[in-house]
Length: 365
Image 1 (cartoon, rainbow, N blue to C red):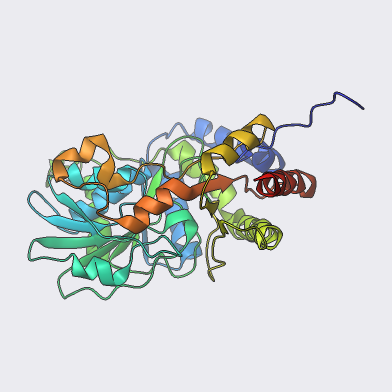
Image 2 (cartoon, rainbow, N blue to C red):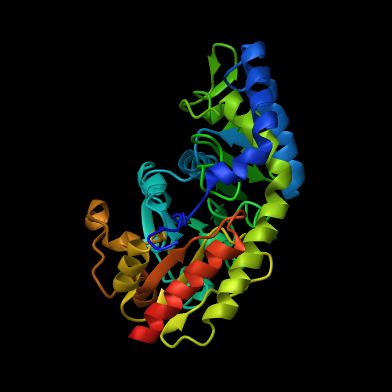
């Protein structure tokens, strides 16, 4: 029928993801309400055990957010005032913010041009006598390349976008995850996780998340209120068994995009890295990225920029002294990246609409 406007294509469709799980999610909520245990407790302990098993790690500690997961992992690894932490300039602000909150200094190293994850050689080249840790960012769900740091240097993975990505959970001293709703395993609010093979580090994170407490009214060190709510844990337990199926669904749709866009000049498509979580489908447009985004928006196709301003050029980090041109690969990527709709419920028809819109724009240039 003429004049009929097709439905919008969202970047992520949480309603469609949760609809088949509605009865289980409702049951989880009623279970928590009946227990009247809303902070930590049995639900959190059960989720931690199930998450550790799913990720193949010895210890998992639930915390209040992905940002706090990274903060507490760094504290537990001994990072403090005056230390340096090497990390990627192409990430969400929390990566650098967590370091700065400890009085430490983020030292950036450029990303590899194809994966956009931390370049190992550049990262190791940025290590000084003050470096205490390296934080590789598993951007868009792509596992960062392995690092072999000098002895005594901790590797703490920022896997906020990479829950379920192969090998990530066991890389380094600890790995941190976010349960922000749009992540591969998303909650119904904020939440995070620290995983590690180190019993000592896990024990310290457990203390730190609850004001440094070792026993009731006994506080061993200064911590904070970084606890995971029981309700979030209960709801995440419902979603956890589906993570693998959802990952494969996203991967299938990402590969469909790659095939459809393979012949478009000026486009650089994401690598199909084995074991990637495919948290996002982020392509690169050599010129006209913002024009393409505006065109898609006019057709009710949602997109996102991850990330339009690299960390070293953020106003809040001006005191670090970095200038434009310091990290050319990250800066070029920030001008070119565009994330397209990608989620397990993305229908063939909706994806075909996205593909046709992108191709029409490319042909018209």
